[in-house]
Image (cartoon, rainbow, N blue to C red):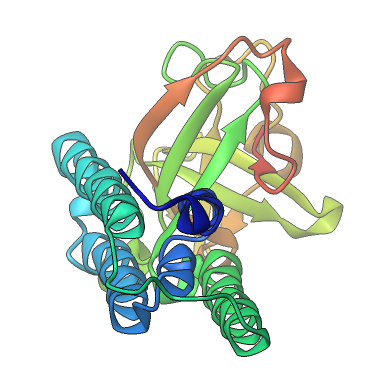
Length: 238
């Protein structure tokens, strides 16, 4: 049973740790373990992406389990007793705030630069232009490093940035109507659902520089009518 004088601080530590993993440990005078928690989370995500295991469902599931395990272990450390019990001070508050801001900055940079730093990006599909391959309401994981090692080939499903209209599209690399894959260094792209797709039949070929990456995995799908469930931070590809 935790001492009454320490109950409030422990409750705050556990709650804070759920929001910012490791931050609650600072309230429990365990700065070293707070740093270890964040380092483990950052390295897990980085290695998952750099190894390209991020495109394997089983590897993603194992990584999610490991991250949840870190949450659980750090929460248990927040609940552990201390001889004498640490007390809250202004310095403790400054330490928690500083730790939180640093973590927020690192994760924010990683999120906004994940295409170049991690080689992966998540997009939301709102339209039916790629049915039945991709359905409305699905979140797709795109390999943004794939063009570094090989050029797109026929049947690759890719995300591209159509510059004239500043629009993100997801299409399939196809052959040119005359039977050639590449025409003047450009690619011919089509949607699998030709009845609703706006593609190279309308705007012609695209250059390789417009291709963001190759679609590797469908993460999950939701009812596309429930737009409130879609994060506004994710780009839509049509």
